Every structure is written in C-alpha cells, then in structure tokens.
Image (cartoon, rainbow, N blue to C red; front, side, top):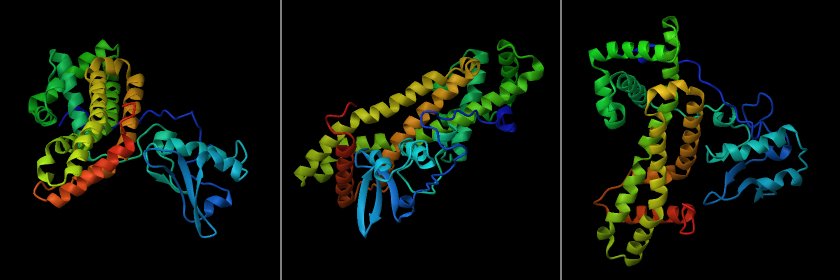
Length: 329
C-alpha cells in the first residue's frame, strides 16, 4: 500500500460559484411561492437541450412556463429567496435532468465539489496514477502517461514502490521549498488532487460506451440489410456522432496533458484543481445527455436483429435531437 493510501484525504478546496449566488446558506430548492407547491412542479430542459421550463398542473391542465417568464408571471420580487433560487435552476440543470422544489442544490453550484458518487475503483486508479507520477518524476520516466491503469495498479502494489514514493516525497518537498517536517502537507495535497481526478477516471470509464456505439453504427449495416431506410439512418448516425464523440475524448486528452506531470501540478495546485473541476463539470453535463443512450446500448446483443434495429432507431433519434448536421460540433 502506498503512502498516499495510508493517509486520509485533506479537506477539499471549495470554489463556490458566484455567477448566480444562492440565498445565504441554501442547500435545497426551498421555494416559498404557492405556485411551487403544486404537484407536479418540475423544472427541465426541452428536447435537445432547449429552453428550460417549469411544468405544473393548473386546473387539471398541464402547463409549461418558460423559466424566463416565471418571475413576471407570478410577481416574484427581485432579490427574494425565490428569485435567487430560480437563478440557480439553469446552473443546476447542467448536472441533473430535472429539478423539483425541495431537491438539493447540486454542490457543483454551491461549493464546486461534485454531487455524485464515485466507485472506489476510480479513486484507486487516480491515486495509483499520481503515485506513479511521483516515481516518474524521481526517475525521469513517463510510465504514468503510457501504461494502462491495470499496469499502473500492478506496479504501485510492488513492495519496492513504497520506498520510491517516500524518496519522491522527500525530493519533491525539497524542490517546492518545504522543510522536511512539512512533508505531510505535500502528501495531503497529492491525496486531494487524487480525490478530484477520481471523477475524471469515472467519467472516462462511463464514456467508453460512446466509442462502442460509434463503432457499432459503422459496422452493423450488414445485420439490417433488409431495412434500407434503417441502413441509411445508421450511416447518418455515425456521421452525426463522430464529432461529438471525438470532442469528448479530446477533453480527456486535454486533462491528461494538464495533469500528467506531478511537479507543476503541485506547484500550481489551486488553478490545476480549478481546471480539473471545470473539465469534470463539462464532461458531467455531457454525460447527463448521453446517459440514457449509453445505458440502452448496455443490453446490445449482436445476434438479436430486432434489438439492433431498436437500438439504432433510438440512437438516430438521440443524434438528430442533440447533434443535428447544423451543430457547431
């Protein structure tokens, strides 16, 4: 077990959003106006990431009211609790699909921390990569950026790794101007960075399915030859999805380029952590859009033609809705 794994994580840095501040101390969408007491009352974006509306039932008729019109329509005063919470709705819908009165405000909006859970395996991967980066820095190698997560996990479990990590901490603390008695601060800082990067590792894993979808759309036309229209749609889906899928993985490449070397990351920790969180939130926002279609493809069976046809139709609707040909992607 590495030195990192033995220490508890340092408290996470907070970077509360001030773009649309919530009411002081607010942790939930605790609206006060009686309109928000109606059932159902749901805030959500329109199809394809369109306009945000509030869906409510009035006189047994379902109504959708644009977020931009709610204040005027219900005489909500500027600066009031409800006014400030409405300003948070658009920000919050980057990270969740819908909001109901009483729901928690995502911590991405209030503190800068992630509001979703990460499986232990991704914390272990992030910690192992940073451990290997320390050893790479000490030895002038680049294993952390070239080896697979599985290879890195195996390497850091070797008995000789602990000694190398301790040497690296001593050397890097000295290079950063920390006296030996403050070496623990560097250990805590590395652990804090690992606690940020684990979300990137989790998203990287979850987005693997996007490339599989693109691959299948390019290679399944033979299984649906009798349905000419579906074959044509499949070809179009592959065209529509290529740019957004490429963009997703370029973002991961950008993160790796900015976090691959341990020394500059420790020397400039606050802006590096801010960058990681920014990229995490952008990828999370994209994942909220992709989650449904990624989940649908988890049941893919190459021998089931009916299932293939259904998945391809779903994917065509998804691509046409979010990534039409005219998109800036």
